[in-house]
Length: 498
Image 1 (cartoon, rainbow, N blue to C red):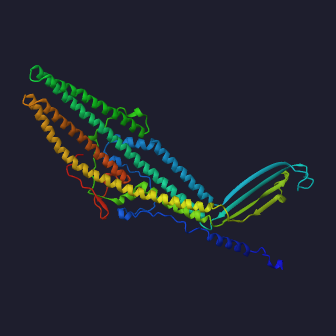
Image 2 (cartoon, one colour):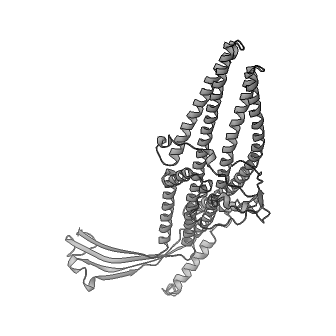
Image 3 (cartoon, rainbow, N blue to C red):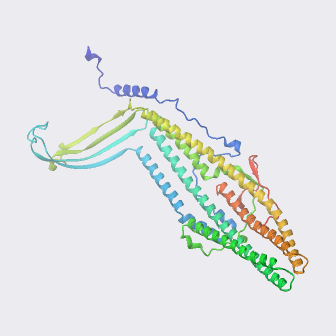
């Protein structure tokens, strides 16, 4: 009776066993464990088309639009020699290698082996005489292969996740390029601003020296007192103090710019930047926010969301059985002289199904961890998109405000220069006192500094806008108009200084 209930080894038995395991595991994939966060609706922010796509290396040199060969050379030098860029490239190579490892795991594996073993066999073991108690050589020469069948998509999901990580790293490299190039450009302009401020103060120092000579003449003529003389003498060291403070900042900025470009801190000690030498490209009247979808950091975050989604699929596939096919064929013999004889031929076929039934909830914990990682990647993506929109809006708003400020500053400087000239002439003629000259001079100095600052801020805001738009296009290449309603308008005042 018992014999009639036994299951004979037919082709039906493995299929029944596999179906039972699949049914058992399918009930344990824990569909209730799901991500809690959703990706932000970019459409309501005016950004369309943010879909995962490979990010090509950006070969456009947006900085060439500013017509400064030294700036272009420094940026290219930074892209080639900056350690952060080199580290980003190395990280990309590491992730690409990991992708190849994951792809290789999905392919059949084949291994060749040759083994030689010299062994004394125990006299009291399972090996019978004459080998028992004897010393003999054993040789093996064979091929072994294995293949894990991806019936439930685990390896496919792992490959897709690895591809997503590689694409994200490629985007990270491009984002690092844009960030570094904009940092170099902004440091270059900051250096030019400081040097222009030094020039303004040196010009002021010359004017104060001329005034001091005039005061001495008037004191000798009995027209002024020592009070005016001491005021005039005190103005010179105060100006020289400000010049030295600015020169210290010039030195520090040169050092920072040299390190950004991968050079020694003193490599740019003779670098002089003329802000007037930079051409300021005219920006269009409208800039579509859809250009934000080209930002490499936005695309990198999007790829990481995709990768985390596939990681969840792979974690769920762990609840299904692993099906492995393994086989070997070769020669094995006791006595090396008999290894290659026909009688030493051996082979084996080892199909296997593995499903851990009790693992201390490790698979559940792994799934929960992957779901949490997707929530993290979604939150990071949402923050990146929001930050990109804010940066663009900030730079556009700043450019508008700076244009208006420049208009008012030019008018104010014209009036203060005229007032200073008039106060100086009245003082020469003995019709005014020195306090009027000092007040007029202070107003002129402030306006000259503001002119330099606004000129530098215009360039800095443009560099910031290029970075906010991902550096994929040059300022002069931005579309002149946008038909989409989701655009941020930028009005340019006619006659703004270049």
